[in-house]
Image 1: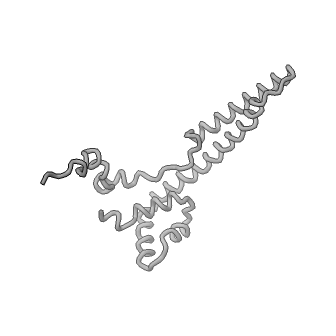
Image 2: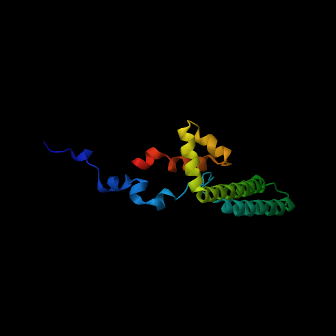
Image 3: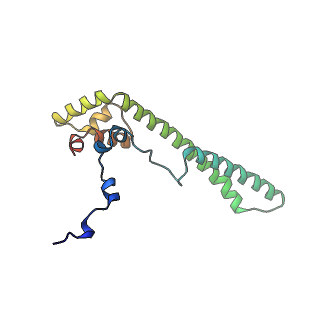
Length: 155
């Protein structure tokens, strides 16, 4: 009986199934991704785009107002530009705190390993342990817990 070709994985599928232990520690410690990208722009791009849109909207409003026109597109730019800039400023702050937590976790890695293994032995909750240590970002806590999961490393 011949094996079914459709059931055999391709070489690309076999390569994509490599675990972090197969690839090495560099992949395992790459870190979590910063989530929260809105409109696929970086926070700095949002800040700059918001300032430019807001400024352009204000200039267009002033120039058209002098001619007796009210251009609603220019009014909307003048309103939504600063809102986009504010979103960019907020995301820059969140990104900084996110990166600070990741750096802190990497510097305390050995202590985290001991603490999480002790929490698991005692039947405690890993998320509560990490929150007690001051890790606020969910993505960072999820990343730490997944990296220090003993079942995952055994695969």
